[in-house]
Image (cartoon, rainbow, N blue to C red; front, side):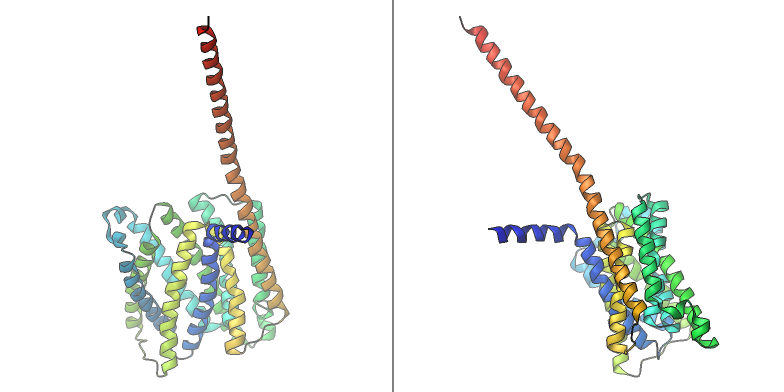
Length: 353
């Protein structure tokens, strides 16, 4: 009986924190997606990789939308939200393009490390756009996460002119700037997704328009640049297709998480992608990680745990007023019942001779 109660409580806890589970899953899948793109970028142009990945993702979205009967993508109620949906899709498309270009100039770990500075930008944008409360604890945990990202990115990001040659340092600087730009626009897309979800726009609808806008904007761009090229190796074709499928899963998990959690929680938890990226990079590409990587990963995990504890505290504080109200209502009901009993007794006594 005790085991059954414990399992039931554990299941309820997991269900209550399902938004954070979505973020954890998307962080791992994003690491696999970055690996696929890094392999393909050795032989294909970044813009072509972006176009193919977005097209494959959109092809995955269409059957998912039909299966879930999400025909509200073309509902008349969405007309007033079209502008916000398109802007969010353009931000997400720009972020996807920028991170792929950054991977072309630098290592996966360094690019993703800089990209994960977006919790700071998401916190600021969510306060400005959504009016969400941004406490001192959240700010401190965001800075702690940002510090961990800097350590994980390793000394070449800080002292690249000393450790690298001039040409390699310039390429690394380009990759850093592109990854930082991706962090800003991705944070904006996260905040806009939160705003859309508050207006009862479903996750499938947001994802459908993102796939449509990204496909429509990237394919003409590749044609204008004349960068279409069929991969010669079958493994490259498979990696290119898998990057699109994984992108669909990552986007779907993130949007679902944003419907359940605040934007700052999602972006801070998504920094766990750093840990997965360095592990995948070490296992599949043979790139070792040093003491800076380990220390940075530990700091990021501590910051994520701190965010979860802070969320649990806020949830408890939000629930406590409702509990007090319930207790007050129960006391009032008891008082009313006692008064009714007293009045009924008085009436009976009056009727007695």
